[in-house]
Every structure is written in C-alpha cells, then in structure tokens.
Length: 439
Image 1 (spheres, helix red, strand yellow):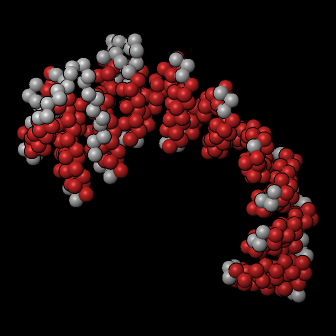
Image 2 (cartoon, helix red, strand yellow; image 1 turned 60 degrees about the vertical axis):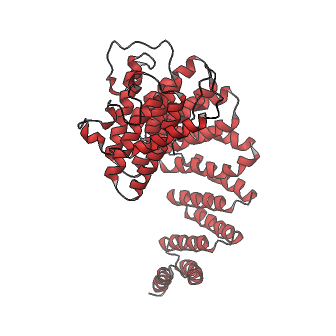
Image 3 (cartoon, one colour; image 1 turned 180 degrees about the vertical axis):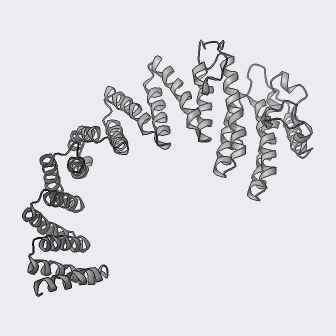
C-alpha cells in the first residue's frame, strides 16, 4: 500500500458543500478506470535507457501536471490510483510475471514524482526493497539510477552538498548549499539502505553527521553515527567501523550514558577481534571490566571477559604472556565458581590446564583436570567429564603411566556408554593402555 500522508492546503477555505464527497469519489473512480488504459503505453514512448526518466504525461495525470503542482483533490485521486497499481504489481509478482510487475512498478514510480520529491524517494526505496528481496537486479539498478539522478539535481539546486554525490559526478560549479535539505538527505539515505547500497548511503549520512555536529545536536549526531556504524558492520567494513564506534563511545561518555558506553565498547571488542587486532582487543576488554564490576546485572559477564583476555595472552605470539594468562584464567574461575557459573568455571579450568600443558607442567595440568571433573559433576555435565578423563589419560600415556592412563580411559568409557557417544574411541584407548601395560 502507498503510505503517503496528504497535507491539506489550509491557505484557502475548504468548501463545506455536501456534494464534495461525490466529486472526490468520481475523481477516484476515473483514476482507477484510467489504470486499465494502455498498460503498455511505455513501449509506444520509445525505449529510454531508464524507464523512470520518461517525461510524457500519464493519462492518470492532468495534461499540465508537469508545469504545476497537483491540487489536493487531484493528489487524493492519484494516491488511490497508485494504491490500485501497487496491488496489480503485487498480483503479478506473486504469479511470477516479473515483466508485467516491472512495467506496473515503473509506471507507479513515475507517477509518484507528481506527489513531490520526498514521496517519490520513499516510494523508490520501498519498491527497491521488494525488488532486492526478490533478486530483481535490473529493477534495483533502474531505481538506483533514478535516485542518483534526483541526488544530482538536488546538488544543482544547491540543497545538497557536492561531496555527497558518489564518484564526484556533479559539475564543479554546483553551488554550495546555504542550508541543507535535511529531510531530502534523510529520505535518500533511507532509500539507499533499502537498496543495500552502502557506497551510496554512507556519503549521505556522513553529510548528515557533519551537519548535526555543526549544530551540536547530540541526538542527531548519535543517530547518524549509529547508522554509519551499522552500515559498516553490515558490509563487513570493520576498519571503517572503528572510528565510528570510537566516536559513539566518546559521545556516550560526554553524556554520562553508562549503558551505551558498555554497548559501544562491546562493539569495539567484536570489531578488533574481526580485525585480529589483539592488542586493542585486550585493552578494550580491560576497559570494559570496571563497567561489568559496578553493574550487578553485568557481573555474570566478568568470567567470560577474563577468559577472553587470558586466551589472547596465551594464544598470540606477539602478546604472549603466560603469567597474565594464568592470572586471568584463575580469577575467572574463582568468580565463576563463587557465582555458580559452572560453564564459565569449566572454560577457565580448561584454558588453565591447556596453558600448563603448553609449558610442560603436566602434574599441575592433571590437578586442574581433577578439579574440572568435580565442577562438571556439580553441574551434571557428564560430557565434559568424559573429555577431561580423555585428556588426563593422554597425559598419563605421554608419561608412560599406563595404569593411571587405563583408569582414566576406563572412566571415560563408562560415560561414553551412558551417553552413547565415542564408545569405540574410548574402547580403543582402553585396549591400547592394556597392551602397553601388559606387552
């Protein structure tokens, strides 16, 4: 449905005649009837490169529609006709008749021009969203071209800055706008998002951001930064997302907005992880820690945060710091077990045991695995107990402690049979241990 709100013209008195509804209905009826006239009129008007740029007056419009604005009555009739056209397009689309769908859509989009630039852009974006979701790339390209032409014309009229147009395709003599047309920019930005065209949307929102910064409108600044951030993230441009979320975090600090400070720091952690920038990832997680500690509802996140810091310290050669890794794993375990966060406690112990194995301290690793079995028993997590028995068995095998290895694999086999998983594996390990014990 065409969702356009008609703004009545209150500059002249409205008639109170009882016959006015009859006139409106008659105009609507005429409009709907005209829809069926010459549905393929476009073909008779030639085959322009972009069917949305046809300028011949449609039968649904007054003959002089190109030289004046529609009256309120004419607008109401046109909106009714556009609704009917959209229903026709939906029917064709549902039937898989994409050729007729495009024909009706293009006529609808050309007609929407008579309602005003903003209304046309909104209709272009909405139809473009449908076309994109149905993988109708030709229609998406047609709509994108029309939107860019509207944008270029706005630059020529001096209501949008030249640097908002992609590829610097506007004339060098385009006037610098004295006052930006914010609603027009917002409509274009939304439409480009609906067409999934971040390269076209981002320059628009950068211009809106610059304007909001100039007027020190903190709400608009945050909104524009959020949109830019989401665009960068949605298209995996993590490097471009970094300064955007850094600015959002600074803004949240200036506004004393603790909730959003946490959100933006968490976003930065994710971005640094995607960029494999472990140094900034660790620093940002450490910056997050005080927020988690001071907010009761965030405290359950602390063990996982510490485990992530520990993992970075233990896994990356440039930043490798086994002492820092151990301390963070141990602290994570203590906090998790105190809060009965058994999954986090298990992960911390697993990381700690692996760390000691890496640095050739098998006795300490075995002690930690024993604690891990106890934690798993508390949480009734027999699967991870089975895995712990396997890991202890492997350590004993490496040290030629065959009786201990046999005992560990036997315990693992008991659980495997209960869970009906990895039975053959544990049976093979038991057999191997016995053969080594009794060659």
